[in-house]
Length: 132
Image 1 (tube, rainbow, N blue to C red):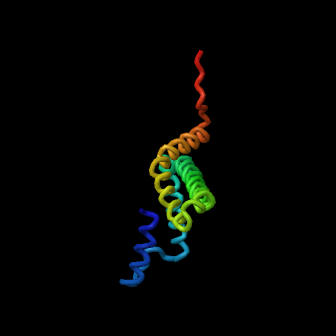
Image 2 (image 1 turned 60 degrees about the horizontal axis):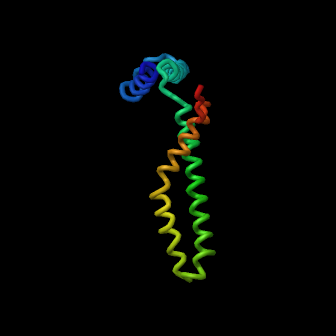
Image 3 (image 1 turned 90 degrees about the horizontal axis):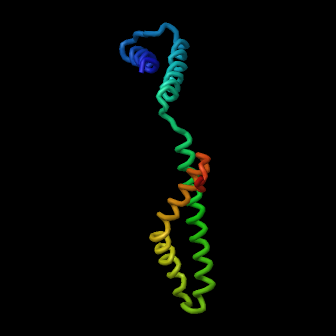
């Protein structure tokens, strides 16, 4: 707070009461350098930013997005080719319902499987346990 407080007070003092706390505006750059350094120091010292958790989550979401997109595209193409001769023009209304049912029943289990695989990938743990 100290690093931002001095330039802020200097700016407000100059604007409203015409008093400068810091004699030369270039000296404010020192405060702007110390502020990011103090924030970075706090993040590192207190382990506030755990990058691997965000990366694992992003990889899991990326894989699930690809799986859902591929499932939707496959259902759309599959239903059009398989059900068009049977249902005719009504076959276009079938694949959104089938996709909703697919997501309803299979999304959470598939998400757990993908997230477990991503966790194993990042931690290096094998799913095979040895007995001996």
